[in-house]
Amino acid sequence: MNENVIAKAEKIIADKVGRMSEGFCALALIDDKGYPTASTVSISKADGIKWLTFCVSANENKARRVAGCNRASVCINSPNYNITLVGTAEIITDPKVKKEMWYAGCEHHWASPDDPEYAVLRFATERYNLRIGMEGGEGNL
Image 1 (cartoon, rainbow, N blue to C red):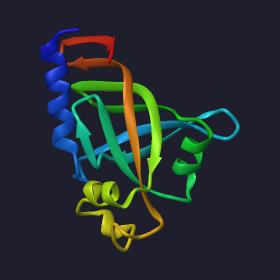
Image 2: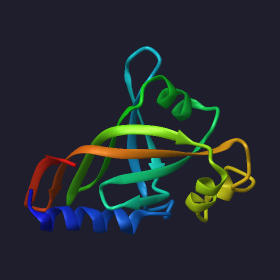
Image 3: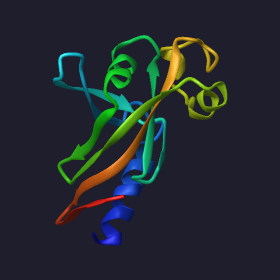
């Protein structure tokens, strides 16, 4: 995989972190009947394409789905790029991590980082498929 394509994908992701109106991506999880379900989410933090975090409700669908099956996929796209990441997810309720992942906009859903209903979903990439303009490829982390 061309290091240049990875760097471009990482910049696209970094530009979307914490920006609710511009940071949406699709998160796909497996439901309790074994079907994939996708929903849009905002990226809370990221380390390039290695891992991304999302703020979620601790007792709602995303958290329950991750508890049942940790396999997940993330897709970030536009007419100019498609970033597809495949890996695993985990729910984090550690207060320190919750505070680190909190960003402006979370207050629309939860009272504070200490809200017991607030949790962090951490996605770790195992493989990827990147298409940025005319460049692209796939690989494993």
